[in-house]
Amino acid sequence: MMVFYNGKILDLENVAVSPFDRAFQFGDGVYEVIRYYPKIFFEYESHLDRLKSSLKKIEISFTAFEDVESVLYELIQKNNLEDQLSIAYIQISRGNQFPRRHFYNENLEPSIFICVEKYPAKVNEMKNGVRVGLEEDIRWMRCDIKTTSLLPNVLSKQRAIKNGLAEIIWHRNGFITEGTQTNVCFIENSELITPPLSNLILPGITRGIVLRLCEKLGIRFTERDIKLSELNVFDEILLLSTTAEVTPVIELDGNIINGRVPGSICKSLQSEYQKLYNTENR
Ligand code: PDD
Image (tube, rainbow, N blue to C red; front, top):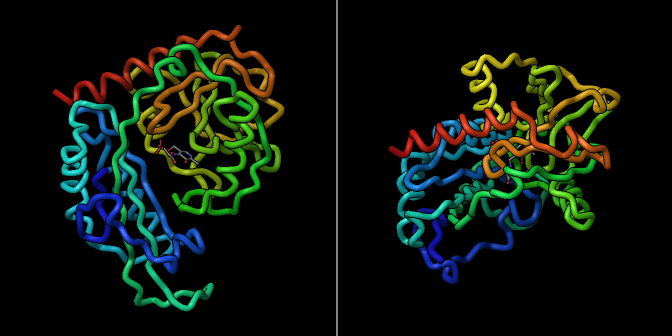
């Protein structure tokens, strides 16, 4: 497997990461996951903008962005993935620092790692829907930063998988925030409702696309806080992310949604979303 690390495309076996990389010791880094639909990286500019914004928020001064897009395509080609649905993972860490100290030296050289991986569409989940759980959101107060510090996400996701669930939706102080890897939205009387952007959720690229699609399709939408106590009124619940695209929830915390049948708003959003990457490909 060919990967990119600090300026070079290398065989994975030849990558040497220091144990003093601050992402390794402190989770002191940020990342992006981008979809490759043959032959394009979908919404590349939006992911790049969010990466830059995450870096700024934690004051990592990485500037060598010019090469990133060409590296992505080169990795796809070198790993023979041109015709395969794939994902790219980009991680930028604050850099190596010895001895280990919580505070950082402001002159560190950030490290960048990029890899690509074959990642088929979750066809069954998107078509038939998924079961999800509910848990309290115990994360820090800067969930708008796409940081590699993901322990609460890891633990919740692990519990989900153990319980045969696809995802956990979190709530904080009685309000819905997001999933461990997804944004979430709800449909009531043909209106789409999603939590507003704030420090409590990631500004998802898919969320942004779906809101634009609502405008295009004439689906009313509101960004507002959603109370836990409201959950039983919704006709549809959707998970949104780069890899999940638009995935219907058919069971939430043991409660059946819409008779376990993906709803009509879900289906129209899915087909419009697919048109976007199919058109871009032509
Ligand atoms: N996850 N919220 C969280 C906590 C996420 O980790 C993600 C993405 C999203 C959706 O964002 P987007 O639409 O930009 O993919 C929301 C990525 C895919 C991951 O870590 O796997």
